[in-house]
Every structure is written in structure tokens, then in C-alpha cells.
Image (cartoon, rainbow, N blue to C red):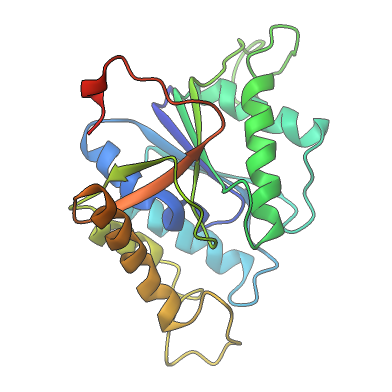
Length: 240
């Protein structure tokens, strides 16, 4: 299955938090979108790997993505090495996305920066002819494939974006997908330990960040991204 956009996150819920509204908008526009989670989030303070599995599938249904898969790398301990790169290259070549969205380059959680670099490196290496890969559910050797663009969504830190997507009309869908992770976020009835993302302030911040980014570009809601190389436009009139 060829995808238009492949969104990759170190943990289940990274993608929903970082770019859920953008994905919902692109899906509504007819784009084929997939999600890859690098780990099952098994080191998370709240919930279990099994509950995260269930929640991620529910969130995928809410967003309407075409496919979601988990690499089952070790939460907290995966590294950006040849073994992990090759496994990710297999998925990039399988789905052949035009655009890849991935973790913030620098963030509070160590897996976010590691995941960002791993994905970026794998996207480059995936285009090299002399790297041979086979995918278990495909016949024969895979063809090289390099995504045209790799963009990084914003996570815990308020990093200044290089561009902002107008996601007006899609913030409710994003919030529904985020809150599918009911073990992770604010729940006054929960007896589990508090974490930086389990407070009401954090849940509220998802929308007020989107409102603030929207305000800065003159719309209701926005999601920001950073880039590794210059964004090219064909004309000044391509810029809004």
C-alpha cells in the first residue's frame, strides 16, 4: 500500500499530540495516511503496554488512518544504529510515503530526539540503491524509496515552528484521538501516579497551543512543524 503521508512517533500518542489535526485534515482531503509507533510505551508510568495497544488502535480509527503498526523497539532504550535503521527502512520502502512526519528534534523525553534522528537517517538511507532489504509480508527485494519531505512536529517544548498548518475545523477530531489514550491523560477518578502529561493543564494546553499558533497565522487553530532543509515554493503567491 502506497501512502501519501507516514507519521512516526517514538510512543503511541506522540503522533496524535504532535500532528493529529494535520493528519485528520489531510485524510479529509483524500490523502492516504499511516502511523508507525516505534515502541509500545511500555515504560510509561500510567497504564500498560496492552492498554496503550488498545488505545492506539482506537485513536487510529478516530483519525481514519489507512494503517497503523508498531515496531516494538525498546521504550527508553532503542538506539539509532544499523539494526533499527534497517527495520525502519523496510517500512519506508513498503509504504513509499511522499511526506514523513516525526518527533521533535529536541524535546523533554529522550526518546523523542532519538526517534527524530532515527527516522530522519532511515529516510535518507532508504533511498540508497546498495542497501538491500526484504519485508516479511512482501515478495522479493524492496526497491529504494526516499520521501520527498521530512517534517518534525512540536511536542513538549515550545519550539518556534518553521511553518504552521491551518487546522481550523479539525481540532475536535485531534482531541478525540488524543483522549482515546484514557490511561495517559487527565482523569480526576484515576488512582494512578501523576505525570507531566496527566494534569488538566496539559490537556488544556493542547488546544490553547493550537489556538495561539492559529492566532499567529490569522486562523482559528494551527499546528507547527520544523524542517531540516529549506522549504521551497514556486511563487510568492504560494505563501499565505
